[in-house]
Length: 375
Image (cartoon, rainbow, N blue to C red; front, side, top):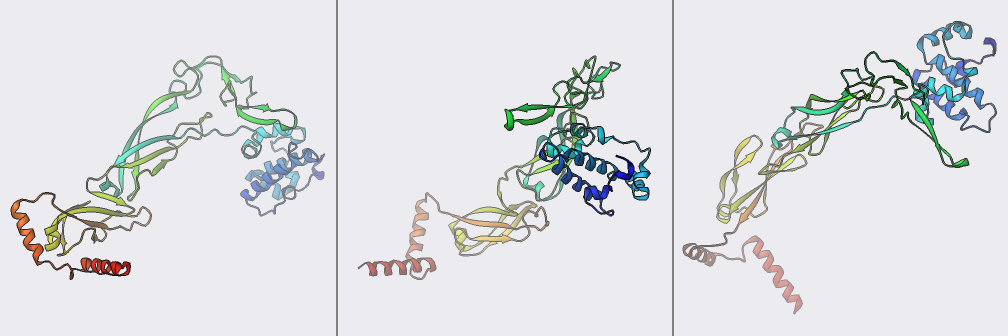
């Protein structure tokens, strides 16, 4: 096909001349999905349309060649180093645009992302109340220092892998006839590198990786909850090709407090009182995250009553607004009384009129009404 016979590249991809790089990439993916021979076997022109879209994308995805094409058209690309798509098979084009086709067809040499790692850090409830930092000491498989991660003994000859031909991946077909499945995996010989060597590294035995100790600092935001993870990007292990590292996920564990229980952003403190303290009222000290504080217990406090200390709880991890500390009164009844205590309580009991006590009066009224209806 001569220069004058070629279609406009923007027309091929169906985009305007003002299209953004992302628009061009999306249009190319759509065309590749539509015209790939494996998906359009009933269209005799799918092969040529596929190559035409690939050529258009190669030119328009490069800012320099796109600029020349916008100014001078196809004639302006004369002498530009490129790929002869007219002589290439679709499987060959995978190696040119592996990052584009890898997501859709499982082919091409893709960047191998490294393994994510997990670790754990334990903090106190008091540390949840404010932002803090911790040093994390962990071990990961990292580049071998002796061979710089290549897996080859320094000075040894590096050759193209005979198994995959330098692509780093191999295709395996399973099944029978129409129901066969194509699976692309890393080459078992070169482990995705695309090359091999005459002598393996003596330290890492050709893997290119060695266990290494690593220390990082992690910032723990105020208000974090037990079990939440903080991701440290790029602190995992490197991929097979040595580029994209995985992440380190640091899970936070919050130690139990001896007196305070967390409920969302609020803190609950259970306060045991004697029945005389509850009846007469008193001042008692209670624990908070900021130390001890004194609270007033009103006379006549009942078992289960709640007191609230505003803004004495934990901050919300998003808004930073603090919750409250809630005090729940637990009235304790003595299991054993000495003789004098029994006498005093009997004297007190004689002065009680259960008919005028709020709770007792309500109960007795309901009880009388129940028996009257039963009769």
